[in-house]
Length: 130
Image (cartoon, rainbow, N blue to C red; front, side, top):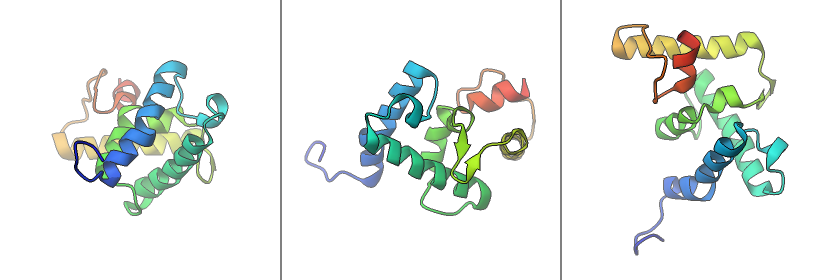
């Protein structure tokens, strides 16, 4: 536990894996653990699980992925930096459709499609629209 409090699932998610993935992403510019970080099998399995949960969340809005975790993965450009969906390689059309869905959500929230080119909430969307 941290500071005598019980550790939540989200705290474990952050401390045990997410922060390691962020470090990997900064060092290698990828979140594909299998290519650069295979010595950490636990992290590789976690990333595989996140791919599956992320894909399910994007396509159905369901599963164990929370909007908070999804937002954190988006903040490190998880979708763009992955080379495959849980079901196989991401095609250009699938990647494009994912960005379109994010743009529609942006428009719904901000009543505009003018995403800043450098947008910290979703760097991939900003650069894709720009």
